[in-house]
Image 1 (cartoon, rainbow, N blue to C red):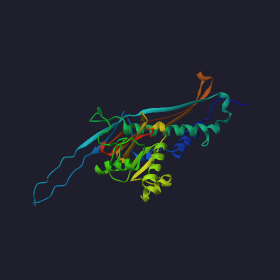
Image 2: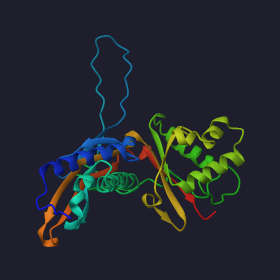
Image 3: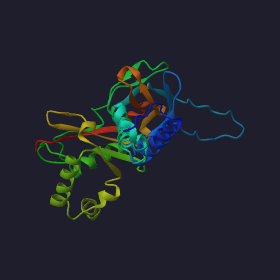
Image 4: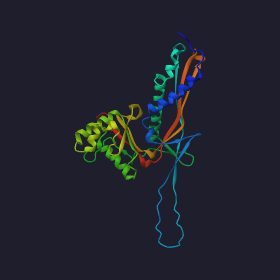
Length: 304
């Protein structure tokens, strides 16, 4: 077996290029559902402008009436994440395969970076946001006005349930009540909640043709339900406490995703690790809510 003593430059180029392709093929589940901004420095500022109104003109030649323009700022600070893998010096006779597009290292590291994007986005949706001129004022998720309880029912006695059609209808109402545009709405859940929802629609809403079409396979084609595009996430991405899963819903304009470094990659020989080769990939990004009226959560009980 031959041993590669020096890593040729073209392997680094191939590794970096194929990692970028892998990121596109094994796409982030949520990156297309948020507002993206490129960052430099220690933070990114998203500026949100308030509403303005017109003033009726009732006289000719009168003075112009100026209104006030309110604006708020939301700040994102990056949190780096990395994947570093070592391969023994005697395992590198197939280095070209390892860094190839179909190679295991490129594929698993690309998937890891995409999961990082999704993890940052979910954290930004449900976590503490920061506002003010310097980004030091903390804003918690408005669970008082923008949440659907685990025991929500439209009428009758409240009782805990998993994901239901009526819970999504309530989330739809919360956004409608805030005049949030219909196009660009998303709802994240796990396979457990999707199964709950399919069963609920088939059992209790069989006369609703659109809902039934969704439950019979429309979800496989990203068919919206009550205006929401459903994003299916791994269980590890969505918080759960006492068997109750937190399922965020939002409008694309209500969540900001800052990217400082999309991807960074290196192949290095590590003398201190018995000449093993390091495959290093990293990203640097963060996310935040931009508007409390455009973001909420549905609570789904997984024990019932």
